[in-house]
Amino acid sequence: MSDEAVTYFPIERLREFSSRTFRHFGVPDADADRAAEVLAASDLRGVDSHGVARLHTYFDMLTLGRINPRANVKIVRELPATATVDGDNGLGLVVGPKANAIALEKAEAVGSAVVSVCNTNHFGMAGYYPLKALERGLIGWAMCNSTKLVAPLWGAERMLGTNPIAIAFPCATEPPVVIDLASSATAYGKIEIAKRKGAPIPEGWAIDKDGNPATRPEQMIEGGALLPLGSTREAGGHKGYGLAAMVDILSCVLSGANWGPFAPPFALRQEIPARSVGKGIGHAFGAMRIDGFIDPAEFGRQMDDWVRTFRATKPAPGTPGVVIPGDPERIAEAERRKTGIPLLAAVVADLRDISQKTGIPFE
Image 1 (cartoon, rainbow, N blue to C red):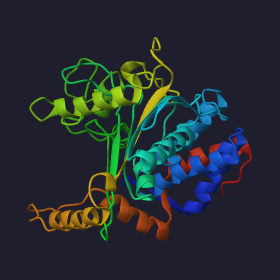
Image 2 (spheres, rainbow, N blue to C red):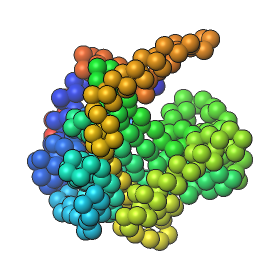
Image 3 (cartoon, helix red, strand yellow):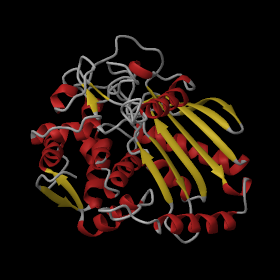
């Protein structure tokens, strides 16, 4: 959350408003509630860019008929431990949970499973999906491609999405280890925040339209690109590029979705690709039963030891010490359940606009 003025709202109020917004377009009640749950999970865990801040974009896409509100999500190819799911151009917030549930059910039945998904849309916070695996005592992971914003290593144009990856591991008594990251050097939202503030951006985040390092947000926004995680070759940019490629292939090439620069836009202002190589965007989900590898109780004990060992790391000067993946989100959730969700004025204005256009009360 930036240092702009914010207003706090109870999570249940935002969840109900989101659900009613989806139902306004004919999304079935259960699907609308699940979609609202995904957004609420993002807001609770401090992933503000993927919570109700995105609701107006879903609203726009549904208004224009670019998303099917009553999608028939179905398996089109299947083996005992794998499946390809066609999302029928539905809300990713609906398609994602349904496909993830298929992966979890298959993993419980046969030990591990992978489900790849095509013909879908933005699925919200990637970390939501492995959290559902934790509820069943499973290890879970999720990934998704997105509209092109990122240049491949040594490239000078947008070819890949920010292509997030998330995975979660249960512990016995310690909080779970939850890793949720984009394969780009930074999120596009941080570029937008810097533009609003009139602030520079760090070198290594982005390039301009000619492929030169960008230090002003406008340089990236006006024809430039984000850089892969690591930025330059010397700093490890080949690793972020490799992760983005992995997500693209597992989520899209494997499922029949649009990969790389052909991913369709989610926001109205984004460029529409010149051609299509598949259907919609893609997701991929996976899950593993721990008892297929090790006694679950022993795994839990070792995970507790792992967490405690890393927490005890000698801290670097001027830092608070080592953070376990998932700590910031867990702390944010505990706080926000008490104080409410902080929303920027621009987000509140978007929600009020939805209220005005639909007649659904917001305040």
